[in-house]
Image 1 (cartoon, rainbow, N blue to C red):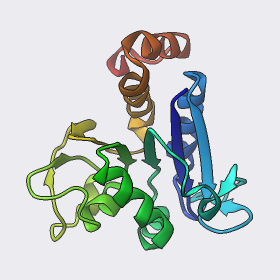
Image 2 (image 1 turned 90 degrees about the horizontal axis):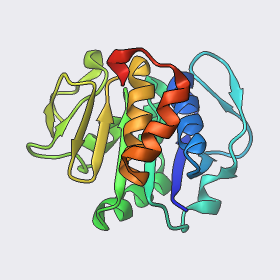
Image 3 (image 1 turned 45 degrees about the vertical axis):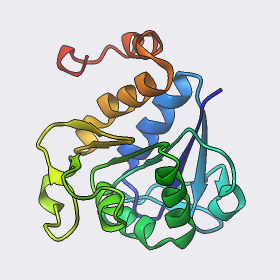
Length: 186
C-alpha cells in the first residue's frame, strides 16, 4: 500500500489540505496527516483540525510521497519547520515524489528542491523572483520527482494527478468518475 505524508501547519488552506487527503484516501492510499506542533491546527479560514500524528513522531517513516498544502501562512510555517525540511531533503535525495500546491511550491523553491530551470506552478500573486525554478502558468506541472499546482481551484485535478502517479490511470479514473467533476477537470 502506498503511503503519503501530508503535513498540516497553522494557516493551511482548508480546501487544498482536505481535498488532497480525501482524494488520496478514496484511492486506498494510506495518508498520514501530521501537525507541526502538538494539538489542533488552525487553518486559514479559522477551522480547526486534528492531525493523525505529530510530525516528529512520524519523521522516520518511509513515504512514497509528501504533499504540501498551501495557504500563505501555512506555507511559511511549513518552510520554517526543521523536521519537515529534513524530510523533504531526504525525499528529494532519494528521488521520491514531492508535491506542493498554491503557496507551498515556495517552500520547495526556497529550500533549493525546485531549482535552476525546473518548471513549477503556484498561486500567481506570490511568485518570488529570487528563488529557483521557471514559473509556468499551467494548473498542474510535473518536473522530475516534483508536482506543483496553482491553487484551491485546482485541488481536485492536482489530487487526481497524484493518484495517477502513485497507482496508475485506472485507479485515478475509478476515483474521478463518481465525483462528477466538470469535463474540463477530467
